[in-house]
Image (cartoon, rainbow, N blue to C red; front, side, top):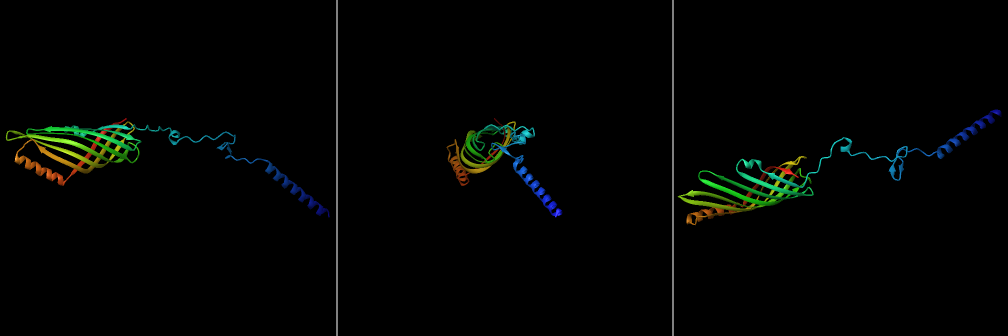
Length: 231
């Protein structure tokens, strides 16, 4: 009998301890280091957690400056051969470029003098949305060329005018300093018209033959290899 009473007393004490432990656990607020204050994460001390800095700032690196929309380019190789070519481009939103271009060249030797002047207006789409990008474009142009020589003691002059529309593809490499290297190449439609200052049947027949040939092949080529500055 005494043993039964002792067992009941031990069980009662154990139940009381368990009940007290559960009540304490329910009354104490749980600690959560991911709790939020006013919708923001907070630390154990209750201070808001600051967002991590950008990667460039965290590494101490400088974010490169955005290049300007203007650029002026020249063909350095042409200068060695008496050919001068310059173009200007304005790039809108880093993607759509409007290009204006002018070209002049002249050459002469003991027998012949030649000259060429032309201009063009075009569009470029930079598909990387920045100056440093591949691009697709189109150039519309008009040019006048002339060759002059002397035959049988008489000046002979041949003129050729060209109207063209040429799609192209190219690449521009641009550096943070503003320096850029641009290349492009294309082939497209052109209308060539040849004329001469001589009014002889032989000269007229020769000009007609050349024009007929050029009408069969209304083709023109476009190209650029230039250095320039972006600002």
